[in-house]
Length: 351
Image (cartoon, rainbow, N blue to C red):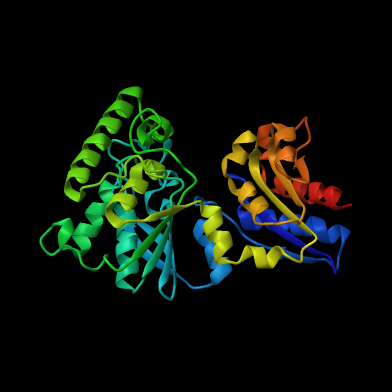
């Protein structure tokens, strides 16, 4: 029996990973009704990260009321499976929690993410994985740290906290940016979160000052480490204060579910994302799938494709755009249209 693995990233604003996988599976079964289709929901640390882990390892989704980026109450969830917790920081500190008019990284705080971490620790988590995609904040993780101090510090000081010393943290991020400077969190990411050019300079100066103070306190500085600039500097706070490891999100997920074992007897892997180009080769999700698929052919589908030959040269067996040339973006983004286009494209690939 033919075995085909389907592991497609979300088409942002259109289809979740699960929905895209289901469409691809339908396309496969239209052509080969008896095929063994294995659907693997995937995420690189942003939207769908917690859901992907839940599908892979099970566990309980914990519901908690925390503070959103503007300190308003919001219901958030995280995954708890025995001693492992998986937190998608966008649940509490995400840009999607704000209207466009409310976006202001000068005031947006990561406090709610700290509340999720604190609750997971109280419930016995000894390893916490954090997906750092989709944040609304650029506070260098100060809000998150304040929530942990409020939760655990008896005298209001970071060094008082004992509860966190035996917890291992892993941040899932493909961002390689440092905390500060022209390639840092403020300059690169804050404008899309509502920052004006003047705000960017203030945010960068604020982060630099916080990093300098922190370095004096600890005797080391991780503000230049890859991942420090992720999620508005939340990456830095986890690296500097909680000694976190930083790994690409897709690598973490695929290792957890033992993807190499799943794929080794497959005939084909189908992966994809909303837009594929040479940036895909800089460590985005489809390349993570490609790297762990061994000698099994990997097909890449996307709603928009540029640099097709570079993608083929990287090792993808097929690179296919799901959309016809004449389609408008508005039409392509309709869920039912995208679903049908994935079905049709996959059916064509495997024919």
